[in-house]
Length: 189
Image (tube, rainbow, N blue to C red; front, side, top):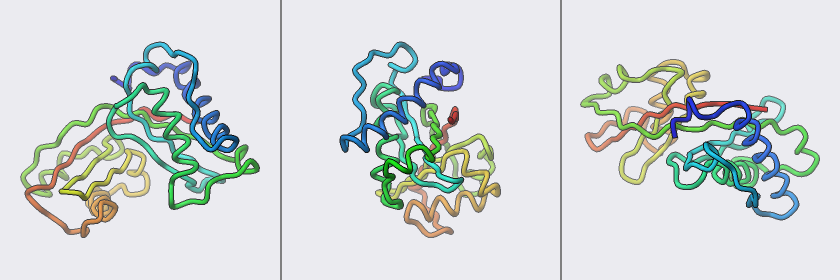
């Protein structure tokens, strides 16, 4: 899915409603929403998303998919539920929290491998505030959404913190290291 051009305001509103409904369903039933409705293009197309939850400006959960493997509307429902109830960094919300939760959805473009032969070569190819990045080496893997550039605007800091997130040393380098870029369409309540 070319996320940049295919998510109009109506599609974005629908996904935000589905995300909130899935969290409410989780509070009431302990499972993500399984929508009975059929959604038209583009929501029925395979899509990858991240759902970020905040409360009073503080992160309360962030879970997502890096590659499209199911219809976008289902991906958003599952990731909203997972961000609320399966992000081990946070206590799950209760009914009192629900009205204070703020939902942000990032829909990802397909991953594009970045070819490089040195860390400097990789850094020179990064576009701050545009690129999300997946870093992988063996079983070590981590990603930063493009919005992380707001907190880590320096390319070196962005990459070294992503290495730490992936379980690698900040100065780690290997010829087997792989990186993939993606972009996002971000919308929120």
